[in-house]
Length: 253
Image 1 (cartoon, one colour):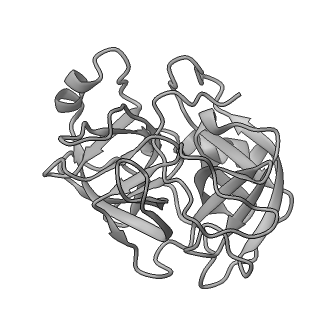
Image 2 (cartoon, rainbow, N blue to C red):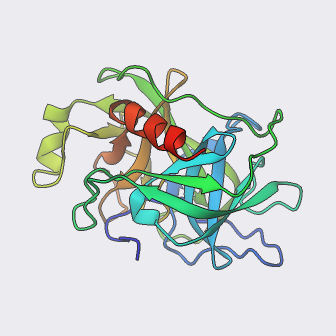
């Protein structure tokens, strides 16, 4: 079972379609965010399990989705190619194979990263595309954007059906460690808005952190309560997993 403790998430809005249903209120919340420019995240996907929204992820290869390990399920329907959480025009492909990092710890979420292999390659288009893994780590202070589907208030009353974006800045390990003294590791990444009045809180993980055009992180974990001033959000630091990702993809053509 996925570890759902201390997760961040962008819960689905009210859009619905037969066979795919919005998640319960355990999803990531973009508080004080804005609607993403339409089509600006063609590599972002939604993973459904048993007709319910499970996690977000990113397409790093036509047949491979990168997400976080605590989202593991035996199978998924992966939706891609839309800014809406449920869209009849979007591509949907089954995925029956998942590859969790060999050092993943489900008690601490250390090495919280997983690859999901689609049953067939996605058809790439202007709305469905891959994103490269980072070749280097970005420095603290770098401006970034995290994106996801979700409700926009701490109590979850106001839902949205479009992809929402939030601008954040990377925070150094030394400055983030006091917030998470027992869990923060070097292969994790912290980010927060400068004013600490915006947040993504509680629920669907795996949503991407893009820094100066580079995929630097996936939402991994965070804390309640969802009230300001918000603590930094923890991401899986993807610049440290490039070799592992390519090794798995190469070994499983």
